[in-house]
Length: 455
Image (tube, rainbow, N blue to C red; front, side, top):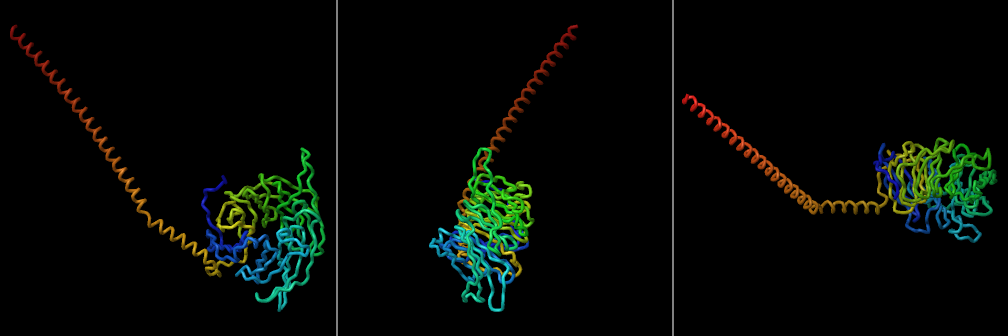
């Protein structure tokens, strides 16, 4: 049975998160209020289609013209507006090698925040990486209106692995370097400006039993946004490794976490703490300066964790996975703030840091959600109207209690009567004994008087 917590969820600060699931839905979750707000689904974009499952996502959460990129299972990459969900443009990531999109799906996606702009159009830089290691960096002219067509400018394509499958990809904070790793592929770092590999990890040696662990990286990230030299990676053999490319090729720190593969890794803003989630739903924070486990988050997810996101302003992280819940946690107390059930298996979650709670007007964007709410309210009312059955039970209980009380009173009265009878008998015995004593005294007196007369 999964471990759970009996503590009440205190609620979230005002925030906005965007989730992606296996049916292709994009759902927006907002929490309104100063503190202790309950997050709810306010918008839902897309139609249910398992072939359009979102496999990767990236967001530029700037105040002016924010963008949201999603890669789908069909091999299409869509760039949307995270404010209203309008599609800005769409490009295909299917290569000319004849591979099906399912065989060479997108595993890494990044929208570059540094963009060039002019009076008529805007330039959007997009990096994508597939399972086979086919990486492309494209510069796309974003149209001013949604009806316009996007044109691809410069495009560079290269391969980041000769064999194996890529399963994790990440771009650093300066957006000059990127890391790649996967099954049979050691973690390697590339210079994006020159499209050149600058470092490759070396597999650890055999253990004391002479067993060599095959290379299989499942999640990786840069430890700090300002330093691309330190990398934290999780493996399928439930290991967490810290690499320092300026020191050596083998891990500087390596330790095991639980007994299931590491599925998600996210860095903190302080530059030394990471959050890790595994396939059995365990979520924990680790100090990578020493490799010490700071603690696990209270409660336990009932499914594999697939994505962890750190809020840039509040001490809050969000996690989602195969149990269809998105959960918000306090990074200081590691307590669950709130959880939202979203019905589908979730693949990714991102934060919109420019969410303005005061400027947002409550709007209904998902009529199906309102219908579900109305149905639940009517069911509650129907249950409240069917309370006479419970009242009968209550009356029966009252009657039983009354009968019990009456029997107790009768028994008490019987006991009192018995005590009174005993007292009466005792009193009668005492009266008889006093009468006998008086008669004896009278007889003695009469004898004494008779003796006196004779004398």
